[in-house]
Length: 447
Image (cartoon, rainbow, N blue to C red; front, side, top):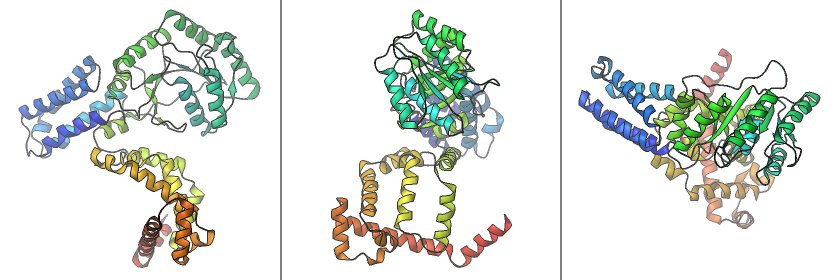
């Protein structure tokens, strides 16, 4: 994630303080100096860092911290609160929709920021909310931009309005809105053109599109990997177009990420979404408080729950629970659960949302060897017959050789999977037997 380095440094500061029973003014000033350097190295805007450190220092040097029995925890809370405020406050900001259909969402930003992909991600996100988005190809300058949006539209099964590359983008936008009215599409998402650098010609075109379509939302797509340039870009676009929100792209990249922390303060406009991966469903509503917690190593359980609720099938979960209670959990169910978990992201992404998980642990989990192991498990189960998946006990030596050959693995790999699955079944029997089962039944009656 973009804030890994910053998070590691801030967590290192607090780790030093936890070893002290009481904090002195000197301890706090030293901690403030290290936090300041960590933020500057992460590319957070200098003025914002100065203001942030002043606010934290003022609160940290108060009696509540210095005389507290848990001063380091009090300091973490102050930093967490101020960091949350810096990047947007405690409430996530959602898209606004016009009372008169269709709502127009205008996407803007520099070339290479990921506008077209962000357009498709946003359309997919909104389609899951039972909306009928229409993506509009207004970038007639970048080679293959129109084609790219059409390909993405097919991938997510959402419509794309285009008029080729010989029509004026303002005309395309106007016609798209008319089309949406006639066909019941809402919202209309305009994928506008970008440039390598901001120029007057680009801004004039965007101002004209804005004047003709009257967008409810003007979303600026900012590449989180571009450092302080991202802040300057956001400031200029906001001055010229009066943006309503920001989508951070490439937030999963290997970047210092501090520019992302500066955008809200510089523009006064909220970060509404963050692109956290390359897949088209890797777009999350931006929760400033959750992001602050993750940076400080406090985890993000709520986002993990949101992801699970979005990806897991409720009926399937109920059926699986019934199977577990009846000790009927088989290798088909195991394979199904592996596929569900993969939808949530890599193991490091999942663990990164849990409190107390450090960087070394994530690096150890997300190795290439572990990724291969997941592929092998799927291949082994898929190489079994239906009967073998339901009743693994029938798998003898000859069957193991056949399964290993069919999955491109070794007999040892098949044996390891079967042992692990047998252990899992034993554990499930223990959890659903005796006192535990009685407790589950009681809780069910209490609902």
